[in-house]
Image (tube, rainbow, N blue to C red; front, side, top):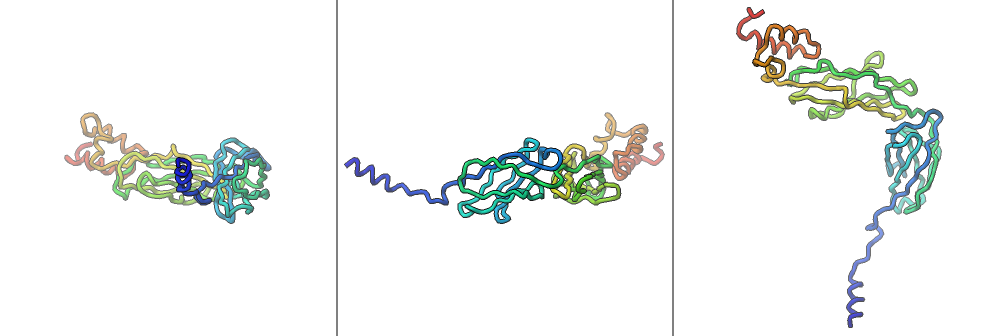
Length: 260
């Protein structure tokens, strides 16, 4: 009797379908063979099946890679294309659902050295948060091998998006930034070359947007006012925008224009 109950109990457990079983990725690892220096850390390697992205990884060790390719059972037997940045390898592989890890060295021809951010900064540093006053971000970017494709600035900290900077002569890129939010903000600059190599700078570009009713607290003395000497220093400070300077002068001369 007990045996019958046990058998019946087992039969009530639903069998898992093939679609319920998690896909086991193909794992590929090996050397990255290029014509020049080893592929640097931070370069992106990716894999595609039928033009669909099935694997993406940042290189952690120069000249080497390990990549999980997550296809489906329907992809079994299909060709896997590997890309380093935007460059496709002439060596491919065949997807085998649930296969053991594979050692596969991948050759690539192209430029895998990222651009160089020679300088980047914001000027002026201090602006009003009125949405009209602005700071200009300047960056000098170079890429001797393949050339600079784009330079972008992430304005997420002030509620914006990623914007393209304007190319000028001599490898200079610029972007005007205004804000209606007050505070100190850092912005990330990203430079990309024509082979998809990228480099970022998240520390060099800082802008402080100040409310007009907080100018005394920000730039005034301990007595919550401006002295003639402080005004002189503020006027000559290149980090402070003209709009901020005029607003401070209006505060300073509010009691009469005879204050020299």
